[in-house]
Amino acid sequence: MTRNDLTIVCRDCGRGFIFRADEQNFFAEKGYDEPTRCKDCRAERKNSRSQPSGRNLNSGGTTGGRPAERELYPATCASCGKQTQIPFKPREGRPVYCRDCFQKTER
Image (cartoon, rainbow, N blue to C red):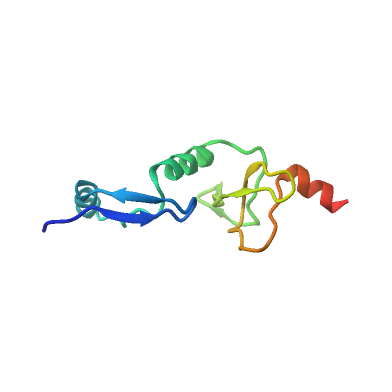
């Protein structure tokens, strides 16, 4: 089957990326779903999952004796403008804060 390059919008950063025909063939041969993240966001997610955070974000259960991995989403702090990662998908029109600014608002 002849495939054409596809443009897919990254679910994390919102940028479009090209899913080349040869990549589509490889994914199909392996039985993989088509990617939902660009290569940069996939690499960032992979790196963040392999880095121990020093705290358990899991709310109870474990998977195979290890804490369940929690997906992190990129965001910009509404207070200071710093890039950060948050454990929930940000909603448009709702402010998101980095750790430092969030702690200041709690007091």
